[in-house]
Length: 136
Image (cartoon, rainbow, N blue to C red; front, top):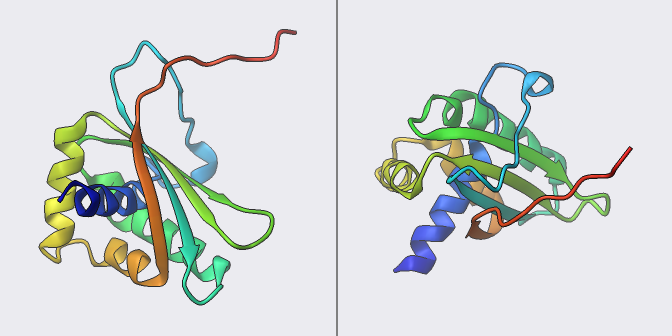
């Protein structure tokens, strides 16, 4: 039960990457003092078309995820070997993510659902333990 739940949550988080209209304007903060849910989703394109997956994920983030209650931010990463797409997404809490998953399961988030038809997801929820930055 939890595997399916987190799989759907991972996909949703992947699509929830942009809190505002332009990705260039989004700044994700990683703070171990904040009590938020982080979803890291690794998507492997089923047909090998990484670019189409990136495009669909960005579309889903813009049309769906940025409007979801509790969604904070999402970031789309493309692997240099063209084999994967990673979404680093932040949610206010587990309840917000669960509410979105129910929406997705109910067929009310078609842009995000399409992402999951295009890729095999591997996602996991995390909490930030610490962060370290270069000193200069």
